[in-house]
Image (cartoon, rainbow, N blue to C red):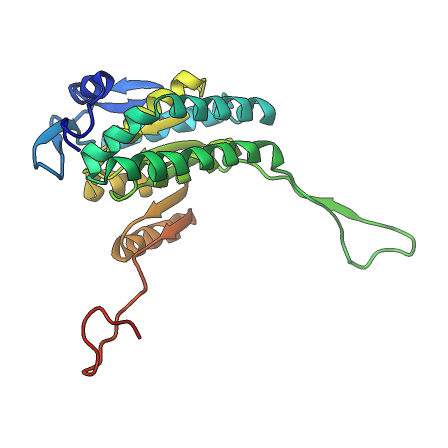
Length: 291
């Protein structure tokens, strides 16, 4: 996206010009590390912003922020209808800032502005409102159990669904806003806290969305964002003892590492990994011809 095609909003330029830190406890937080990660515009190769390269201690601060909020029940303790109201307000704020988010997405990721507007932001809004509605639909079951009992006796059991705690979300570079919110919204709807690590190449939209979450009324510590490398920041996040659930989208190799680490602590994992669509070409068929 160039200024000759779409005029960059002043709010977008102001956001790019900031000295971006982490998002912990509902506010921007400085990193313990002095390292910075440049964010490039793929269309031009120019540096458009920089973000903190989080340390292991930074990740611990973010996770413990989420843990304290969870234990205090500042979010999980709200009535489901109240969480739904706040999440719908969150979606409304994202819609109000939709052009700003679309421009940030295009500038940092490289997709066309129309795809950012209609697909990335548009689909994200649909998902946010759908998931917000699920907040009041989470319920357990009452069951008649078929177990030996004295004649005439009856035994019933009931189940109740509870938030698991702090969720870690690892987001790839290709759809940073949409896939990021695929992870954020179910966690928030369930009453969990979340720590999101966006790709180090496309961190900006998630940092901006975190600000909107606080503006919507999501309590401090419930939604945290750490920016940094997968090798340091991602590994520290997925192996942290206070993480109860990991949601990862990325390579198969990294997914295997996360699964192995999670096995030691029995941490729940959801892994969306690399493609499984190998191609087969015979001598009789040229490239680009499907079987």
